[in-house]
Amino acid sequence: MYEENTAAINAAVRKLGNALRVLRKQSGYTIDELARKVNISSKTLARIEKAESGVTVNKLFALSDALGVAPDALIRRATATAASGESEWPEEAVRELEFAREFIKAKYNLR
Image (tube, rainbow, N blue to C red):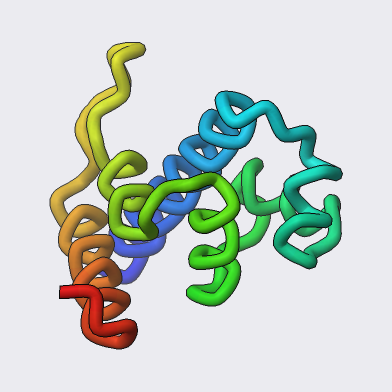
């Protein structure tokens, strides 16, 4: 069970990193520019995009704000099935991301 959860979490982190990279490029930012804007190192941002590092709630909010998208919309985007034919996320990962989404909404009174 633990190994399944770890795989689901790793998949979620990869999709979130990919969604951030796509949005960054669509917004016209280089890694260096976006990193400066949200006050993190470009190495940290590159590691988040490559799923070599997770993203904290604070960084998620800063990144989503800089990219002009709500944090919950970013999470939804990351959990959507990719148009490239990528398979659906494991149900466990979707539940965990939904939990994170609800937590963020409650914490920041976004209802």
